[in-house]
Every structure is written in C-alpha cells, then in structure tokens.
Amino acid sequence: MVKPTFFYAANESPYPTQSATATVEFLVVENLVKAFKRPDGGHSVVLDGIDLTIGPDEYISVIGHSGCGKSTLLKIIGGLEKATSGSVRLEGREIYKPGSERMMVFQQYALLPWLTVRENIRLAVDEVLNHASAAEKKQIVNEHIAMVNLTAAADKYPDELSGGMKQRVGIARALATRPKLLLMDEPFGALDALTRGKLQRQVLDIWESHRQAVMMITHDVDEALYMSDRIILMTNGPSATIGEILEVPFPHPRNIQELRELPEYYELRNHALNFLDRHFAQED
Ligand SMILES: Nc1ncnc2c1ncn2[C@@H]1O[C@H](COP(=O)(O)OP(=O)(O)OP(=O)(O)O)[C@@H](O)[C@H]1O
Image (cartoon, rainbow, N blue to C red; front, top):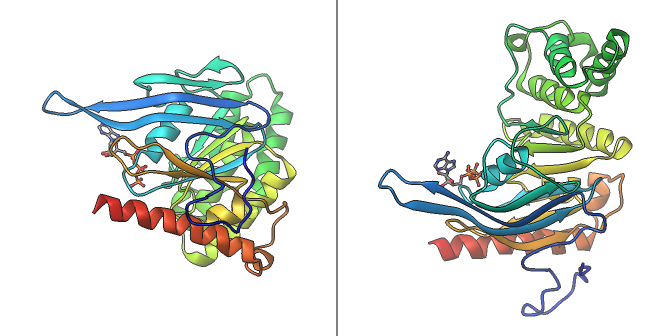
C-alpha cells in the first residue's frame, strides 16, 4: 500500500481512497453492503461497498461522523448483524454468526452485576476455553486481572467499581478468552481524560506484548494516532464507505509525549481532521 510522504500537494494525496491490502490477509471484508428496512417499507443503505483487509496483528481504528455506520460494520464483523450483500472472511472462512475467535468490548461495560470481577471474567473463560483445566482457567483469569491492574478489586461487584475499572474488566474479560480479533466500540468513550489516557496505555502495553488483530471505533483522532497502525476514515452516511486509509508509521512501543514532538504526527492529525471537516461540511 502507498506510504504517506507527509508532504504533498492538496490534490496529490498519497492516501488510498477505497481499499487497503494488509501484507497478510487475516480479515477480508469485500464489497460489504448493509441496508436496514424502514418503517415505510423502503430500505436505508447504511454501508455501501466496504473493502478492507486486516493483518493478524494489526491495530486498526475506524473514525467517522456519528451515524455513518461504524458500529454496524463492527457488529457485522462480530457476527451480531448480517450483511445485506458482500462478504466478511476470517482466515478464509465466511463470518455469519458470533464466534469465540472474535470478542467485542462496548462503550457501556456489559458486565453481569451479580458476579464479581473474577467471576465475570471466569464465566467468559469457562464458555470459550472449555478444554482448559480448572487450574489453567484460574491462572488465565488471575493473569488477566493482573494485566489490567485489578488484583485488589478481584472480588468486588461491578457497582462497587468506577467506570474506568468496569471498562478494564470488560477488556480483561475479552482478552482472557484469547480471541484472534478484538472488536472495540468506543472503549474509552465514557471515561474522563485521565482515566482514558491510563487505560489507552494499558491496552497498548498488553497489545504490544501479545499482538493480535484489533479493530477499534473511536471519535478521537489523537487516540487513533497513538494506538493504531492504520486509521480507516469513513465517509458520511447514508451509503457510507471508506473514504481514506491513513497509515500511521510510528514504531511500537509508542510514547505519547514523543509522538507529540513529531511534525509527522501533526501532518496526519490535520489530514484526518480536515477529512472529517470536509465530510461534515458536505452533509450540511
Ligand atoms: N437495527 C437497526 N435498524 C435500523 N436502523 C439501524 C439499526 N442499527 C443502526 N441503524 C441505523 O444505521 C445508521 C448507522 O448506525 P451506527 O450505529 O452503525 O452508526 P455509528 O457510526 O456507529 O454512529 P455513532 O458514532 O453515533 O455511534 C444510523 O442511521 C442508524 O440509525
């Protein structure tokens, strides 16, 4: 795929406009269309021709204006929603229902309130890693509780936890089942700036040491630049598609303060913000 040069004339953008090809094909989305039935009997086309290829250890962010279809795309990849046409293949196999190799983390934590932190994570591990021994499962649960710094809160119930702690449980729960693909829908969206920064760092630490494919929806360009390898910029709905894909060339592990010193960081940031402004203006 085309590498950004960072300095280009306005009409000579080096960024691809429709599709991206990762070096190794892991997840392949091809000509994906999603239409919802309207109450008047007609159809609203939400996603119109999404083409995307993601590698097995890539961190991808998806950005676009509210309502353009980001969550719908994530749900189709998660198997929670069916495509109207087109295909989604994971390691060559068509996706048509949820599967344990794909785990989702939502903005609202979706924890079971009558179970403790440990029990919430254990339940998911029991469901997915059913061939592991009891001792192995216990170790996996403890390891993931420690990864997100929740050992001291392991026996607390969700309503005894802060929002950031609940989100850490949701992330630990998803990671503990060892999915090949982690799908996160605005995972830090409900958190205050300080908690958000800490949790972004924790998720990056985990990902940098246990690489897997991640697809994360965010509204925050800085978050996308800090965390991901590529940023998918969606056009506005209806009939949204991929407008551009930005490659983020900074090596991991990343340091947010160092990134903020780089002119390239601001080139990419401005490019993404200008893309969003342009599309917002078109909608008006
Ligand atoms: N089950 C459904 N039935 C009908 N329309 C739906 C359904 N789910 C989503 N939509 C519509 O599809 C469009 C895209 O919704 P979606 O939630 O995917 O957008 P989004 O980009 O994730 O938005 P946001 O950033 O606000 O979360 C919206 O117009 C929404 O109303």
